[in-house]
Each structure stands twice: as C-alpha cells, then as structure tokens.
Length: 69
Image (cartoon, rainbow, N blue to C red):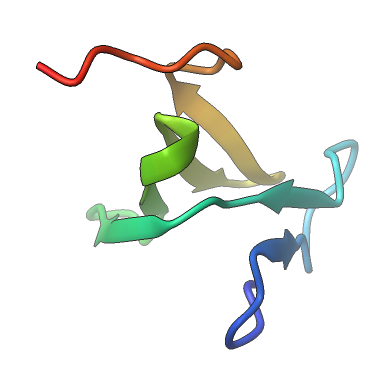
C-alpha cells in the first residue's frame, strides 16, 4: 500500500518479504489479468511489481541509471 503523497509503500499481506519499497517519481501503473500491480519508477530507472509476498523490483534492479535513449 502506498499512502497518498508518500514514496514508501507498506506490504499488508504475505510473508518472508521486505516490508517497504521506496519509489522515486512513479509515473505509470498497470494491472495484469491476475490483479498484480506494476509501477514504472522513473527516477530509480526500474519496474516494480506486486506479487503474493509484496512488492519487488522486476526490471533494472540496480543503482545504476539507464541510458536516456
């Protein structure tokens, strides 16, 4: 859950997962057919997704910025 105006989310359900994930300028969301949420985390240069155990990084999961082209 990401409270309105907050950058840090809280995992409300699941087990054995980190409790928070921090977003930096999220600028897009999508839901798949199973109800999983995906977030484009612009300034962290990654895609974050929900799953049965909370949120996790799915793509570009490093601290290195990507190319602008």
